[in-house]
Image (cartoon, rainbow, N blue to C red; front, side, top):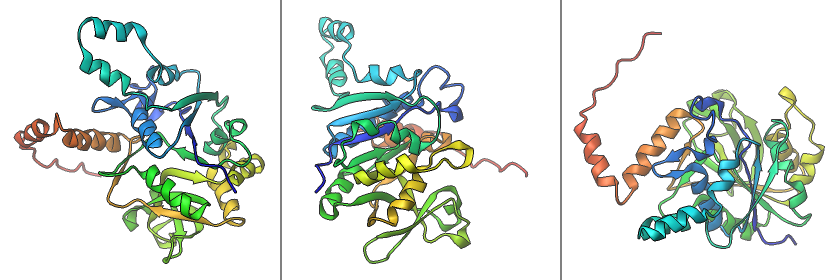
Length: 298
């Protein structure tokens, strides 16, 4: 029997080149959606799921991430001195209670599988673990995606991956899962298939709960294209040994914040949901009287 799910790996070593020049000196995970860095949303989603130990797989240029979740005594003292207790409360809320952080370095950019493997020495042989991709923001009006998955994991006690429907003509942009219609048991994983070859329109959306066996398989997974160790390859091997279930993320929405358009959509929609900003921001957008842009000629 496996131990309780309490650990999550968050790979944050990527250099964010799609967002240059913004990410030249600022980690992409520290770019803000409204008033919080992306990574803060991810940490709170993990904490809601009962995660108590967060493992950052990081890079030498990403110190701002660790600093964000550390105490800043001088700033806190200034806020107290100035009577700005509301802002102090905001500072105190950055790190959820009972959450610990550990950082390990990924010395080379050798793929997502390699990044996860960098944390292998922190995961015990009988421990399941979650993986959250920090580029993917998941909104749900009631309960976070990972919290829902953790509840489901407690009933199946095997690996669970988050799935979300995408238009069939866009499956070539995503990793797609072939699943049984009855219980979403995964039987196939295909990376960016052509629409006519896709086993479904269910995309894998950056939230995973794995049994310890996945980590063992990563240790023997051979490097693929570009010399990278691919998580998908280890998952495909795991499918031959253990049952894996998909968990369809319904009544919520994911945002690919590693993409500029996805990042802009997240900012607009999160601002509209904000209880303090939403009404005024909605009025502002309505006042613009935007006209459709003419499409550029090919």
